[in-house]
Length: 536
Image (cartoon, rainbow, N blue to C red; front, side, top):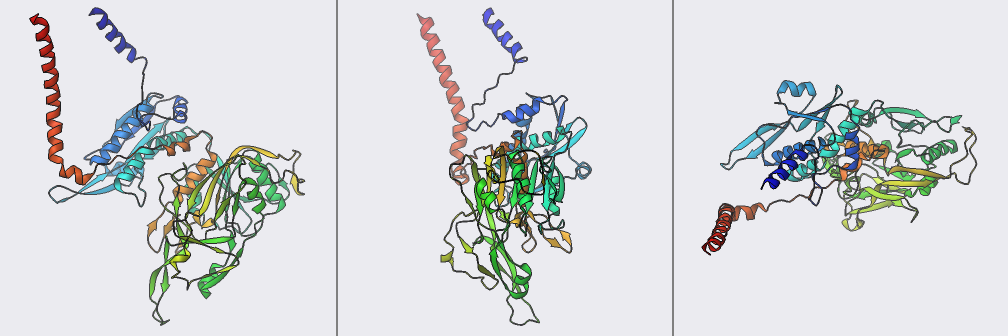
């Protein structure tokens, strides 16, 4: 007996020194990734975490709160975490710029209850602060699905905030200009979204060009150019990729005139020659000179009145503005809602077994068709034949990762390039994203003021363009592997509400009687064994 007590005491003492943990869940719900562990180990000061999600919460938000506390507890294994809860007040919320979530619930007596919650956590490190948003509210998902998606993203949300707090120097990204790209007003929200993580520069490549002019940038964005790139510009971008640079291409495959479309009601569409087809083909993709149409699309106001003096605007489906589906198989688009777009070109993966990992990020729905060039876009084409929409899941955005081959492998250095370094024929491992429309990255204007990316002013709906673009650039520049945390999956196991209600009494009886019966059985067995033993 003494030996047993000594062993128990020793085990208790060692548990305070060495923490042994086993995560036996299938989805590794209680484990942090190696990227998170490394980031936490790099801290050399305590991390303060203040949870604002408190008060009279329903079952779903209590589950989110518990998952948040478990995540913070796991973080405390690898770094010093000071954790406490703060009673939220309107003054505190306003000072932090936090918007509450209003929950409307129907109680058993039929009355409606309203609860205000603040699904946020405040993280502090070395005097710097960052707000962690715990609830991801994705349009189109149910409340349970949104809460489950939020729990899946908790680790990424905390690690993203910690990564920003640890940064001593802001990385830079560049938006290329000089080819008729949209002005700053129409890319205002793009720059705003990226400025949270990067210093965003804009500029053009004008000869004479230093071949290494882009080397200081973590990523380069090519957003909806309208004129062709020169040989010198293509060379600089190509060699930037070969040296490990990342590029986001948002390219239109066709050219058309929106002004002519609005004034005349139709416009011809022709292939848009940007001089990038050979480069992208070499890398593994092709943006086709065509447009996709989709039954799942945005409405636009159309005048259905025959009297010009009395217009009657009615919303009509505009199949050239598809609502794009997001892939659940990529860290960029996981748990993301639809993405708004207009005049999108399909993308093909080419190259076969070239060692480049390609993933579809955005695609059309199950009822799509493709309009080839030369062709026409006509506002009168508002009631197309459903039989023509026979294509499914047409890819319109693709990510690529690997060691790309240079488009200048067997060519001379163009004139106007300042370099004394030989051409790199193969590159180091890097990443690229190709989108078949610049509209995904642009915002509209209303009364000369920019609207958010993905906001449709006619329907008032907000889509996931902003999150998609931010995640895409984070994926391009993610050398620590943090964006992969968005791929974490927590299986959602929901009760059958109808069956639970119908069998409520049986469940209550079993839950109440079973423990007592088991204890009685164990006690009776022990009593019978002891009686039999000592009767002898």
